[in-house]
Length: 201
Image (tube, rainbow, N blue to C red):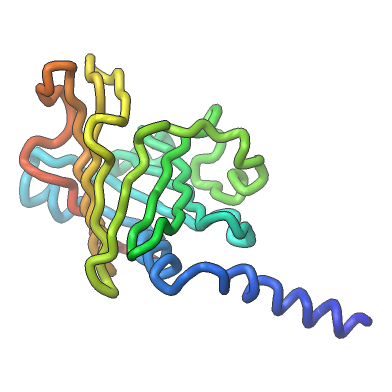
C-alpha cells in the first residue's frame, strides 16, 4: 500500500501537467524568470532601470498556468510598483490569453511567491478588459497585446491603458501606455517598449 501511494504521488503531477499543450507550457516557461532593463537604461536614459520577476504558482492546478509577477525600479525591489497574478489559458489555434489579476494588500507578498500560493484564487481581483491576447509566432516567440481600448486606467488622468508584449527565450519586450479620453498618451514610454533581458531563469 505504501509503495502504491508513493507511486501515485510521483505520477499525479505528470498527469495534471500533461493536459496542457506543449505550446502552452512553452509560453509559461519562456515567461518565467528574472529580468532587467539595465542594458536599455544605460543606452538611453529615457528608460528606467527596471527589474521584473515572473514566478510560477499553483503548479498543481488544472484550470490554467498561473504566474506571480513583481516589477520594481532597480534598488527598490522591496517596494515594487506593480504586483500582479497572470492566469494563462489556451484559446485555440496557437492563441493564448493572459488574464491579469491584482492582490489585496500586495506588499505582504514581496519576494515570497510561496505566500501567494496560500491564498484562494477567488480572492484575486480581475482587471476586466486588461487581458493580453498572445499568439505563437514560432517555437521560441509569442507576441500580443490588450484588446483595443478595453483596459480601464485612471492613473495620471488616463481613461484606458494598452499593453504590447513580445516574449522570447532571452528577451521580454513590454510597452505599457495610458491614454486620456481624447486618445492622447498621458503615461508610459514614448519611444518604444521596455526591453527586459533575462538574467536568471
